[in-house]
Amino acid sequence: MDKDVLKRLKNAGLLSEQVPDLGFVGTGSYALNKIISGDYTKGIPIGMITQFIGESSTAKTVFGTHILKEAQAKGYYSMMVDSENSYNPEFATHLGIDPKNLIYAAPETLEQSFLVIEDTIKAIRESDKDTPIVVVYDSIAVSPSKAEYEAENYEGSNMVGAIRAKTTGACLRKINPMLRAKKVALVMINQIRNKVGVMYGSPDTMAAGGKSLEYYLGVNVKCISNKTSDLIKDELKNVIGIEGKLRNTKNKCSIPFRECEFELLFDEGLNPYTGVLKQLESDGHVERSGAWYTVVSTGKKFQSKDFVEMMQAPVDEGVAPLANFLEQ
Image 1 (cartoon, one colour):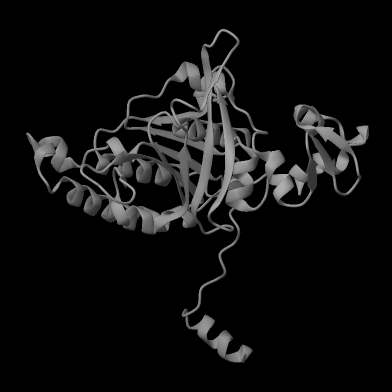
Image 2 (cartoon, helix red, strand yellow):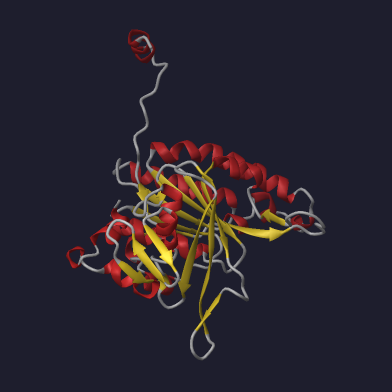
């Protein structure tokens, strides 16, 4: 390759500088961090759109809240766009959110939601050019377009989906270039609803955005939890949480179509270690024989019930190889 040619093209303004790695924000789950970014300590990418999609009550909002918590812990700007009007400040604070450092907005329409995100980004960048911004939009599924919001009986029209998808596409075309240029991570919460009358194949469909939203996604995470079989109960049979799977169906940061498990306790939030042991086994760092696991690099044996304690133990207690997997 002729370097002089490349130099002339660059001087003519025909080539762009390589885009630097803008970093990542943790999800509250080490296993999910791993399947998204390939690293237990990273998570969702800054500069892209990440979507969490699933049926109701599958922890989508909780993941968004944990991402905002991780962003605040790094000193990043955090913003909640609450179109569902379901944000619970007390619960969010319980999960670790600092409400004094959270930018909150509750717009009424799809267009207003994207406009307030755009205006907030511009306002921050007037005085701070570098600190990353993390925005959670919860949720695009319930945000009506301006036409829906202002019209009577608009929901009965068969054009609702097409108008909403067209509006979403127009908004995304405008805001997407800003994300990398302005160091913004945008998390979209979406819902899966069933198509009516589907006899064959999957009846699942996106509630909002359609194909236009899919095209702009950097990462797509499908949240799966059975409302009957995946309940966590205490000794008195009271439901205290849920468990389920996370499926990475699109990924521009690492290998797609990976899965991991998650566990949510209502009083405590996400268990950050759920799914990590399976991931370590899949990666060949540990081997399993019955109820016992063996650390491949050291030969140390342990049972799954001791795993979390081992992960949290100080490095100098002889479990450094296992504990350090989360730092690699």
